[in-house]
Every structure is written in C-alpha cells, then in structure tokens.
Length: 172
Image (cartoon, rainbow, N blue to C red):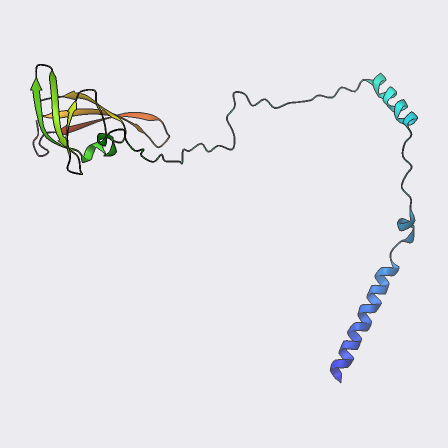
C-alpha cells in the first residue's frame, strides 16, 4: 500500500514538472518565419559596392617541395629481412664460415671454405659472400679480408671489415 502511494506521488511530480517545462516554451519562436531571400537586384547592387571598395584578401598556399613529410617517422623502424642470395655463399653470415685452406698460385690466391651446411666452396678476390653482400678484398697467407656494407640503426650504410683467419686460435 505504501509502495503504491510512493509510485503515485512520483508520477504526480513528474507530470507537474513536465507541464512546467512545456509551459515555459515560447510560442513566438516556433511561429517565426524565415527572412525572405534576397532578390537578384539586391545582390547585384552589393557586388557593385564591393568592386568599388577593393577588399584585399591575402591567400596563402602551402608548398610542400623541399620539406619532409611530417607523418613519416624520423627513426627507421622497418628492418629488412635478409634476402635469399644469388649463390649459396650469400645465404650465410660471414662469421659462420670456416676456412679450410688458402692456396697461392701465379694467377692469384684462392681459399677453400666450408659453409655451416657442410658444403665446401672455392673463393677468389672480388667475389660476393655473406648476407650483407660482402666483397672479398684480399686473400693473404693466413686470413681473408671481407668488406661488408651494413645498415646502422639510422638506416645509413656503413662499411664493416671482417677478417676470417685460417686457424681461429692462432695469432699473428
């Protein structure tokens, strides 16, 4: 019984407040008409007045030539995947290659190497080797000098000299 009285009191207050807000609306605003459209003669007169007073308005345009794209990251985040080499010599890192022996001839020096997969190959000066496209610079009597072009953290190419020794434990 008390619950019904509370519900009816709530409904009564709700109706009173809605009537108050509906009565507060202004009926004149709802019945106002839109202003009549300007005729072509009025607009022609106004444009003639505007021509006589010469309003100077500066128009600026954006020229992107010579400027960097603001939406491109300054830090190179994409790391290139090592691509599949042209020869089996270009599928492995230079540090994973082991030298079997170095041979001297009148035509030039060459070296026998073993790749991590167990296959042996012959190297001559100027050949490409390794995943970073290293060039064999010099083959000496106990080591091979390889120059690689490696990208640093900023994406710039740097030269890296790698020396593969005939016997790892032996020092010169």
